[in-house]
Image (cartoon, rainbow, N blue to C red; front, side, top):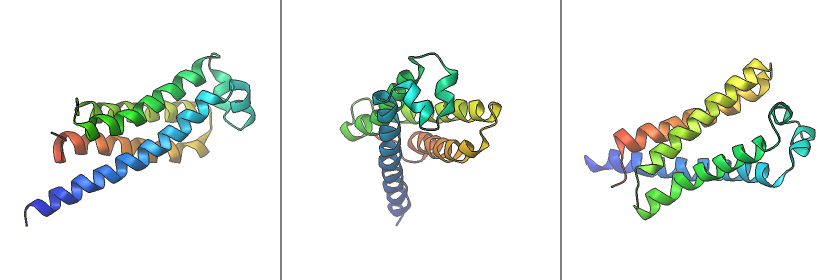
Length: 133
């Protein structure tokens, strides 16, 4: 009976990792393939406030974070990278949320908060509750 909560946590973390990886893979991939002026035109005003390669760099970091959520844990090669990737994505969402708040774009904050909390939860879960070994 004692193994069931650990298995539930383990599978819950995996489900969260996959969903979060898909979100960041899509968001980051879109930033990688879309020009900065087109990002601004699509309603992402932040893209107009950063230097030209900034959107591509953010997109690359999000894609790498998505890969980091899955690959190290799935292959069990350097699985400690999974909670590190999750923590880095949480930090990314913290910075993004702060940038949106300063710019008065409060409608963007809920997504930053939810994604940041999920990322932080995965980081803590994979360090404390159910590490990949």
